[in-house]
Image (spheres, rainbow, N blue to C red):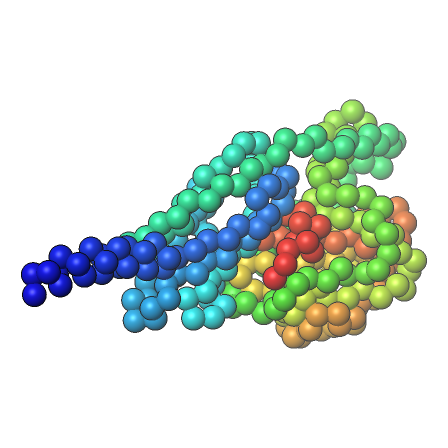
Length: 284
Ligand SMILES: [Zn+2]
């Protein structure tokens, strides 16, 4: 009997330790990002469903990650990297029950382009009424984008229109020598009337004519992710309507503050404006 213990106990312990170390795995995609990008964590927590440790926990840049379950013991989180995030290699520790894993994300240094615009001052300064309206609409937009609902998106994200990009994400605008804003979306070229399509499934949570954005549609994809479509010439959806990926939601136009017909498209993830190209690239 003693012999059996001597032989099997170390084997059993090794096996337990091995299984334990295999219980949780973490995949990060991609491993390197630019400020303003999104990254993805896929976590597999345990092979034994009876030891269900629940949702994993992790944080990045002082913010708790919102994991959601895709299958038994499979969790996923989309995490925004704010455009102001300092470049360096960040350790990210993911905890689940008694276990923890650390993965690394490198935020690369990147100098976003600057666009200098000169306009007569009277065209730049807003009237008190316009300022009031724009302020009110910014508040409305902020409250719409602060909701976190159940996941509606499924699979990879599609582009909203097939036309070329005329202005990239992150361009710093300097108007009459003063830094005014950062272009937190991408502009697609397009003639008035070009169809604009939902980039994934979701629900229309805003359909309004705004001072800056003109005719604007916001789709809530769930998990704190929203897509924003601006300067439309027409709406093809109603507020609160459920939409599917590829569904036509409006037409390219130049409503609001636009100098020509184009689609301004943006993503907002958990209150952070992120580079749409980084989301289109994700293998989901
Ligand atoms: Zn734009």
